[in-house]
Length: 409
Image 1 (cartoon, rainbow, N blue to C red):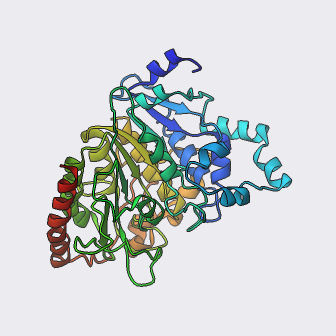
Image 2 (image 1 turned 90 degrees about the vertical axis):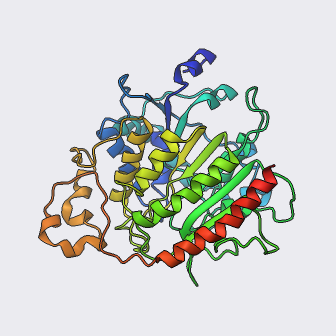
């Protein structure tokens, strides 16, 4: 696609942003070695990237261009960019091996279908970039294995007026286990008395000593000097399950109704799922209140255009399972959670003896020898989010959402 006509062809589609080069770069991250390779190869092996005219939304692989220094400088400081962009010649040679990148692209089924860099590209209904979601990066500092603030950089251009949306509103939702400090703090404006084009909402775990330490991670207090109704936080206790997430969903949905966003950016960090090495939450991907249920509600029921990003997730096979399932949801044709993992280059990584999560070990041989399937199930961890605690969140949000509504009126 190299013309304006090409943009018209992809309106209403899902743009899947990926390339061999991007996967190779992402797989070098010390926190997630080779995760990107597993994610893209599984999604390709499941046939999700094949153009299927019977799906409600057809999918188009988009090969991204490298970010320019000018684009990065719309948020990051000059000194920081001087530092992180000073790669050694050996590193550059490693990352720019075009033949290696081409072979990776072939393995993942990522065809070179470059999206024209023109405003018309915003006509897409849904875009997915699982290699993104680095929500801890700051303006002048890397944090939590996040080096470029891609979430913030994605939000900023969405504020620009378009012919049909003079002053767009953007809602950023973060489902990662960890608080979205880099994003939330970058748009936090407690001294403002007017409206804002960007609302951030992070649903996460926070406790003494738990990363990241941020004054914005606890439940917002309207009487506090730091209160900003456009910076929302829903902190959950250990063991948060689908039942807990189902109960707090009306808060998120009400915030969306009040704010009425034109764009929704959804960070889908999967370290909140059962089986992640952090072992803090007990979320799963299927059923009411699950992470897949949230993705389906936001992508297929909420109005507005959506951008789905990756994030945390340190059980790579489960990250691949989840993001493959969420990609299928975005096409409007979700996979059955009983779908077996197809044979492909990463298949051995999904062997039952390696993918049964830590919270499921007590099921012993029944689950150890189960077929290798797509589902990520909850374990036996106790959900410590008591009815009383959840009621306190609901009570607090009566005043928080009233303040939000007041600022928008």
